[in-house]
Amino acid sequence: MYYAGIDAHAQYLRVAVLSKDGMVVCEGTVAAEPAPLIEFLAPYRPLHAVVETCPFWPWIRDALEGAGIRFVLAHARELRAIAQNPQKNDAVDAQLLARMLFAGLIPTAHAHAAVEMERLRLVRHHAWLTRYRTMCANRIHGQLHQSGIQLPREVLLQRGRGRAALRDVTSRLSVEQRRLIRTHLVLVRQISRMLAALRTLICRAAADSPDARLLRTVPGIGPYWALLLGAEIAPIERFRTADQLVSYAGLAPITRSSGGHTRHGPLPHAANRWVRGALVAATMSHLRHAPESTLSAYYERTKARLGWKKARVATARRLARVVFAMLRSRRAWKDAPKADRDSKRTLQAATAITSD
Image (cartoon, rainbow, N blue to C red; front, side, top):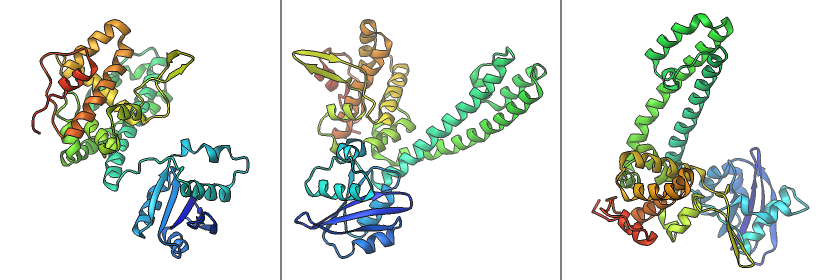
C-alpha cells in the first residue's frame, strides 16, 4: 500500500508518495493535468491519495478514481498541522499530507458525487444571478434616492411597470443618471430572462431527484430549496443522528463549558451556509403556507419567549430534524393535529408519516 499527498495549485501539483513503512519513495512536481499526474503515480499500486479542499479537487478526484486510486478529500480548515508548520512550502505540505494519511489523521470532508455537483452548480448559479440582479436594482435605487425619488423595488424587476414608472420621473434625473439607469435596467432584464430559464431547469431537476420530491411535501419548500437541500445533504447516511445534521448546517449555537459554567454563544461561522440559509428561508416560507402546523405553533411559542430572530433559528433547527427523519425513513410530510412540547415527541409528530 502506498500513500500520496497532493498539494494542488492552478498550474502545478506537488506530489509526495510514501511506502507502507512510511518512507518517502518519490516526490516531485507535475503539471496540473490528468495525464501527467496519473503517469507520475502509475508505479505505485495500490494507492490512497489525499487532496485538501480547494477549487481544483473535483478534476483531481475524477482523474484518480478513473485510474483506480482511492481518493480522500481533506478538510482544509481542520488541517491545523499544515497551517501551523513553521517550515511551510509546497514540498512540506505534500509530504505532511501523505504522512497524515499514512497515520490515519486526515480530517475528511465530503466529496459530492458528480450528479450532486451538477445540481449544486445549477442552484448556486441561480443564487448568484439573483444576487447580481439585486445589486443592479440597488444601484438604480441609489440614483433615484439621490434625486429624492422613491419607487417600490419590485417595480424595477417588472418590464412594463418599471418603464412606465421611470419615464414619469426621467425629467428629474441628470444625463448621467439616466444613462446609468438605462444600462442597469438592461442588465436586470437580461438576468431576469436567464433566471426564468434556470427556474425551468431547476423544476425539471427537482422532479428527477427522489430526495427533492420527498422534501417538496413539506409546505413551503419549493423546487429550488428542495433541490438545494437534497444535493447538499445527500447522502443522508453520512449523518448518524439529526444532531449531526443540525451541526453541519450551523444551527446549533456555540457552547462553552468550563468549571461547571455553561455559556451558549452565537451560531458558528464554520458551517454549510447554503444548508443553513435554505432551512431558515424554508422555515419562513412554511409559516406562510402552513400557519396551523406544529412547526408554526412552535415558532409562535418561541417567538413569544425569545423574539422572532431566535425563534426563526430554533424553528429552522427543528425543521432540520424533520428533514433528517424524512430522508432517513423515506416518508413524506404529514402534520399532526396536536403539538407536543417535548422535542423528541414533537419530531415524531411533525414527521407522522404516510407512504410517499
